Length: 114
Length: 110
Image 1: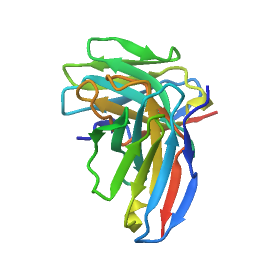
Image 2: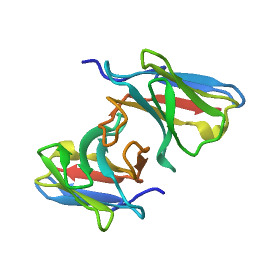
Image 3: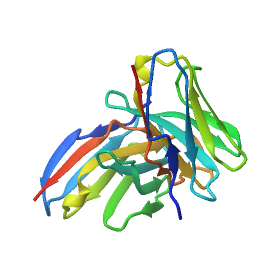
């Protein structure tokens, strides 16, 4: 079974620009969660989508948004980029969202904002 | 609120044992353990559920004390491949988001 894929793997953007990151979950997985990982803050939850609906949302500003398509692929968007948005963005997929589900992480997208 | 992991870092020799702890101030539904090697994605190790059910790995064990809102990960007879950063993630209710601890860096030396 193919794992979780994320594109692009690396991205350099300028302050004020916007960016869209993509995540394809494992086939059959319907839940996709997004995390931001930085050395200072660790792994922080952004949001979770299940069946095209946002089920949970972390404590991030409205500049961070996401969506999920009918094939379970998900995108996240960050508008008006700030230097502090530089991070590794990880997505993780799981079969469902009923609780205590194993999450399978993708390799991440390394975003650098200059 | 983020769970607290301890220790923050540990260095072992091959064959030695280690315990990593994860504590929460809130009642927990489940505790998840992941290992992340440098430059790689976190990899699932184990889930412990309220009520005692455990899912995961047979080479690494863990416990979940519901009364204390605490979980411990036990790494016995460590191997070089155990090196990495271990994260616990806690779920307060079924279907809630996972909140991760700050991580424990474990290095196993020959």
